[in-house]
Image (tube, rainbow, N blue to C red; front, side, top):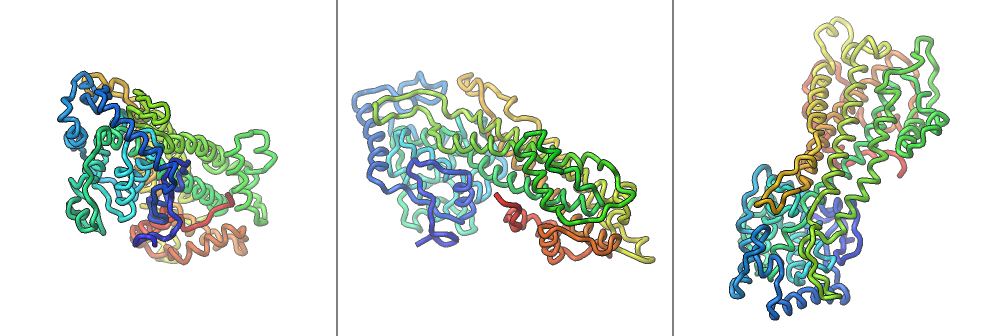
Length: 518
């Protein structure tokens, strides 16, 4: 039976098999549950790694982070009687995070991503640790994880220390909408706090789980925003009496960027209705309409590449050292380095912000009587004497420009700001988690732009119908326009739009509209 709140009984299985961005997203939204692999082969592989580590310790083997101190302190030998305490010291002294807490959705994604890495079977951890992570997901016990404090190598040490501490019954969690002590919640659920085995503290914390989790969520949001921006462009072409021939198939056949071609094809579907040409129609629309496939297409073409980077990281073992149970070797390396995620997030936030900028420019044309081909100023729906005191979407356009400017400001790449840390042991770091947080902020701002553009689309099409009676919309646009009209009354008398914006943001993040064939 699924835990409370889970929409589907089809669980995401953690057994070392390949997971997708969508698996993490569905689990993060509580659309699917989590279960640890039950096969004998999987469980034996996990157990072999832990047993091999135990044998090495019994034979006085030297293992980084197990019989030595951490980081630059790797030259410090740990007395045998203190080895069991070392993992608990690791998460204790890393309890120095700051900033906002990760959201419940983000936190579930972090737990899932860390479990996926440990389930690869080369981290030297016991089944008890994997089971404890599964229990947190199953019961939705969510560690309070501060978002700031990671440089992305040696992985997400500080934020993941909060996961390690909660597994051991320390620090705080979100549980059923309340902030509570982890010890109380685990006791309520009958879950015994974990006593970490040697290497298990390092295995939990020394990896890219936070940045990768945030990247999975960012990718899904960016993919949907890409589709919405295409649909909005079609609305804006119609509302401003633009030229649909800019998206001709023969035109795009000679510039073979597949994503750009796909965006143009989607626009052709949305603009397929027969509309009479006008004598005063411009031969060429301004760039924000004419070049929309070229702008949105960059994001569309980048998404598959970024998916590969993110999913490879998701399905990697990324702590250090790795324990190979088959060849019985301890492999010291640097898989905790989050460079691929840093690059993906820096690139994704750039492409998304450019799309927000495109929509901002489209709105600037729509509200301006010099460029909107006969629509009223600021898309005001007021008529008669009262038109003089009504201002339509004037302030909304200002807000869109503010959100866009802030999104563009956030596009400075984080990955180039490596800092030498920890006595120059971590002397080149990825900044992947900062890049991922930046990307989520750019997405948040860009989604606000999209929400405003949905209001403008609803308004613009309705006002175009006043000018061009009998305006014929393609079925895709007609259906979505009808939906928007139910959600958003026509702005005739000035009114506050913030509640409608918030409602549209919920709809955007819930992916309420089905857009285009896959």
